[in-house]
Amino acid sequence: LMIRHRAIAIEYLKGWFILDLIATFPYQWMTPYASSSPDTDEDYPGSPFVNPLNLLRFLNLLQGLRVFKLLKIMDKLQGYMDFKPLVNGIISLIKLFLMIFYLAHWCACGWHLIAIDIEGDDWTVKVGLVNANVQDIYIASLYFCLTTLLTVGFGDITPQTSLERIYSIFIMLLGGCVFGYVMNSIAIILLSLEDEKVKVRKKINSLARFLQ
Image 1: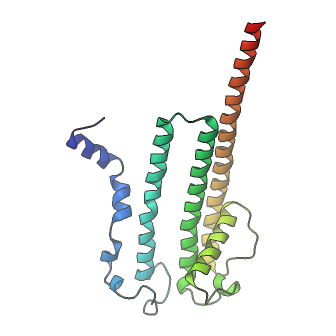
Image 2: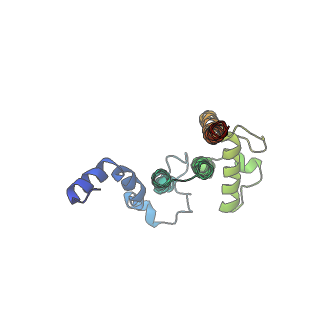
Image 3: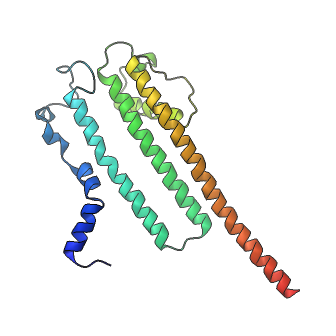
């Protein structure tokens, strides 16, 4: 247990300082356009990645990086607590679902960002969401990214522009890694539960042989 302030500060600088700085930095101070309405992009036509307002929106997403700190705290609590294997498996599944959902959230925000300033028939026009509210577009974006990341891909939402196709390729490559990671994590969880059952069976067999 550290009680010296200097040692605590050094440990924090070597650990969570960078993540906390990225997640809590006031990015709206970096552009003079932050004081204007965030919903008006008419003055900045072109790519959504060049638009300073959209760049500001993307930087604000970095505040969600604190979720990784929460997952780390859950890992420590899980290590300190003497949970049963079934409870540890449930906690691991919850963390796995949170990681997948958070990754899909980031991809969905990027998928929506691409369609904001693109002129022409983007994916929102194709599915009839061009005049929809933010909630409906976010749900559709999250739906597309989850189905793509988990290699389901129903095909009802498809990329229409070159930039959307490039972003879809990135999500598909990322989805291959996510699918492999999910399968491996579930296999480890099930294997840990099976190992506990094997240990119980061995103890029962040993006790039975002793009683004989």
